[in-house]
Image (cartoon, rainbow, N blue to C red; front, side, top):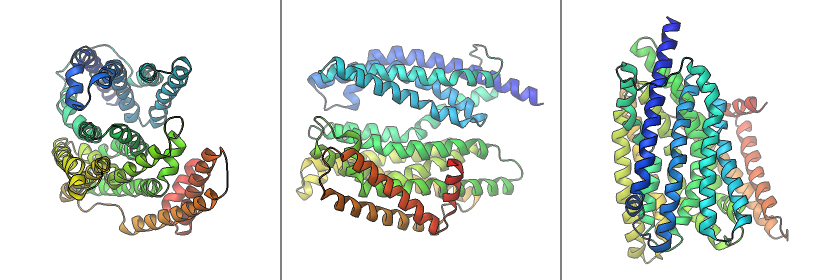
Length: 450
């Protein structure tokens, strides 16, 4: 029986890979030809050289995106065999290639457009490296592998049937970001850049904690067996534990962005033409992003629970609600609210991220209410979350106060070291307070480090 299941899994994986490879090839070919129309749709406010450069960069990105899709196939194979380390360590190669291309390109040219194109090719090479790093182990785990476009198997048809609902509901954060970029293209120059910088930081905890924990939980949730009550009890237990674990990481991330956001932005970006004014602009936008950070990560876990119950339609419906709300609220907050209250139009970027966060909370509440009706009451521990907020704000106050004191001393070129030190102080104080409060997640984290 085990051999039959393994053979079936191998054939399904082979068929899915073959179909994905074909779709990637077609999408790259078609995507390059429709890029100008796509840019006009996503960023209608771009004109002239900005539009031409954007079109060229997207044309370069397309092959890299296709390689990332194939890399995601490897990730799915590895996750299904509970091999999580390689699938989430491989993206380091992707980032390293981009950084290397950026550093090398900066030494070759001073033209920012040319440098952007060099960095884009670095992304393509990084995507290839990420895919190739996972491929040998994924190939080994799959077993007998042969190219096939077989779609008669029920398992393959189920994957294809659920493909688009899962892609849309899982990618709702990216879709929301596209909507924000589209609206931001009508705002003053610099709005799109500030939004992009803030989104990069915002997506970091989402990727590290929300995506990672939800992905690691999906195989466990999907393997639940027994009676309806037994399956519901198992799902509730794992879901609540995952929500508590995510809160342990996301709550301090939110407070860090609020209290130390200028230090973080300055540490990562402030150099060259990116000065203090740009740092403050990105920090303010980042503040708006924090509104939906916790809901976005919790929502991914709830979506995984729906997928474990073989329901991909419900998360899709709620994702559509989120995108519609993001669009409506974003247009109002970015283009109309600043004028109504006499604020500068640049404040519209903050309204974009804040409205997207509100839409994220609506989606999360809908997901939780729908699942609670099916398996019983779920949710993170209110007492635990309150303790985490208290610990995070206390640690933030200590780090913020330390920063004010140290700013009065002349450190010359030690801005980077000061930023790293304050972030380190914040993290240690947060862990110390959580340890004093006997929050169980601390021991789990320390055990993993040991």
